[in-house]
Image 1 (cartoon, rainbow, N blue to C red):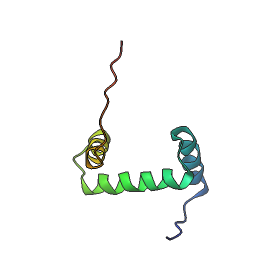
Image 2: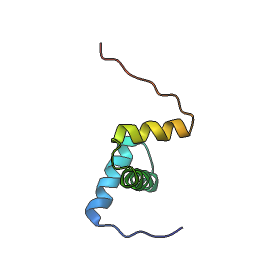
Image 3: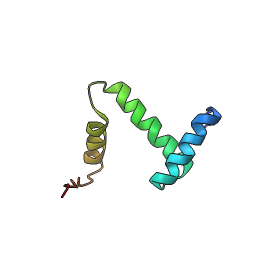
Length: 68
């Protein structure tokens, strides 16, 4: 495990988002790093397509919400 230095501003954004997503600060940062890496490796995919692929890889069922 290593240490990644980030700006105070980015750390604050990670902290706020981790609270909303109910993740630890480290888990939120790791999620962003993973999604960013996948986005760079697959520049034609949307964020939603990346998430869908990752969920399929982990055999997670997708649930679609319908507006009433």
